[in-house]
Amino acid sequence: MSKQPAPIEKNEIIEVQIEDLTHDGAGVAKVDGYALFIPKALPGEKIKAKVVKVKKGYGFARVMETIEESAHRAEPPCPIYNQCGGCQLQHMSYEAQLTYKQKQVKDVLERIGQIKGIPVHATLGMNDPWRYRNKAQVPVGEEEGGLIAGFYQERSHRIIDMDECLIQHQENDEVVSIVKEIAKRYGIRGYDEDKHRGTLRHVVARYGKQTGDIMVVLITRGKELPNKKNIIEDIQQAIPKVKSIVQNINPKRTNVIFGDQTIILWGDEYIYDSIGNIRFAISARSFYQVNPDQTKVLYDKALEYADLKGNETVIDAYCGIGTISLFLAQKAKHVYGVEIVPEAISDAKKNAEINGFTNVDFAVGEAENVMPWWYAQGIRPDVIVVDPPRKGCDEKLLETILNMKPKRVVYVSCNPATLARDLRVLEDGGYKTKEVQPVDMFPHSTHVECVAQLVLNK
Image 1: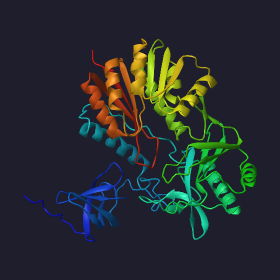
Image 2: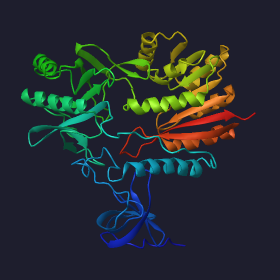
Image 3: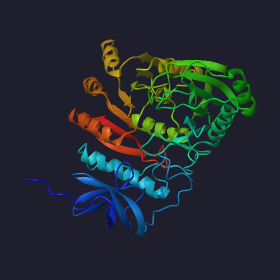
Image 4: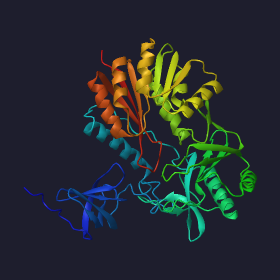
C-alpha cells in the first residue's frame, strides 16, 4: 500500500496552530496529522506559515505572520538574534524556557527510558540569565578584504560579524573586540575555511569570574604569527587584567577548534577561578564549565544526591579537571577520578594540590577499563558519579557499574535523550531512579543539564 502524499506543498502558505516545541526549540504544528516544524513559533500561537521543505513524514515552514501571539512571547534583546545560531529561545520568556526544559526532560524519560512516575523537579534557573558565559570561542574570517569575528549563522559556517553577545561575560566581548582591532592593525589575515588559508582561525577569551583573571588564546593555522611581539605588547597594554597570552596551532582542515600544539606567548600557563570554596587552575584547553554560578547549583545537587556521611568511597567517572571529584572529596572518605584526556588529569592533580585534598586519586584511561582494575585492587565504591559527554555512557561502563553494585549512582547529564537510554539500562540491572533535577546551565539555548539519583534495589 503506497504512503499518503503530504497534505501540503512547498511554497504553500497555510494557517496553523502551534501545539508543542521540538528538542531544538522549533514550534510543532499538525496538518491532517502531518508534522510541520516552524522555528521561532511558540505553543498556543496561531500563525500564517510558508512551507519551505516537504519530506515524507514531516515538513518545515517559516513564520510569515502571527495571528494570535503566545503570552510567553518575548522581544529578543539581541540585534542579531535572527541571523546568529548561538541562542534558540530568546523569543520566549525565561519562565517559559524553564518550564519547557522540565517538560523536555520528562518527555524523553517517559518516551525513551520508559521511566514514569518519578519526580522531575522544576528547572533550577538563574536570577539574571544574561552575560553568564566565562569563555568565548569566536571564529575569525574575512569579508570584502576586512577581518571579521563573530558566531556562525544558524546551520551554516557563515560568520556573523558582531561586537557583543548578550550571553557572554562583558569582559570576553571586550577582549574579542580588542584582539580583532589589533589583528586588523597588523594586517593579520582571517582564516578561509574553503581555501584553507589565512592566519587567525579563532580568538578564545577565558575569564575567571571570581578572580578577574583573563586568558587570550590566538588559534592560528600555522606557527607563523606576523608581528607577534607587537601584538603581545598591544594586548598587554589594552587589557590590563590579562594574565596569559597563548597561541594554539591548528594546521588541519577541520571544524575542531583547537590543535595539538600550544605555546605560552606571555604570562602564565593557567588562570584561576573558584566554584564555592574550591579553586581551579584553568589552562587554554581545560574543560571548565562555562557558567560557574549554575555549576555550583548543579554540583551541590550532585553532592546532595551522593548523600555522603564521611566514610564512603566514591568513583567519579569522566572526571575532567576534577571539578566534581573535589566537591565530593569535601564529604567523602576517598574519591577516585578517571578521565581519558591526559592533560585533564594533570590539571585535576594540580587542582587537588591547590586545594590541599589528600583523599583523591586520579587515573588516565577509559573508565570502563580503569574501574574493573580498581575493583581487582579491592576498591569497593559506595557511590559512583558519572558526568559523560553528550553521547552518554559507554555500554561497558554501565556493565561495570552493574557489576560493582554501588549503593547509589549519581548521573550528571548534558543530554536528556542519552540520560533516558542509560537510566533504562541501570534500572533493568537492579537500580531505581528516585528523582531527576534539571538545571539551566545555558539560558536562551535549548540545552538542559540534569542530575539523576539512583539507588540499588534491596
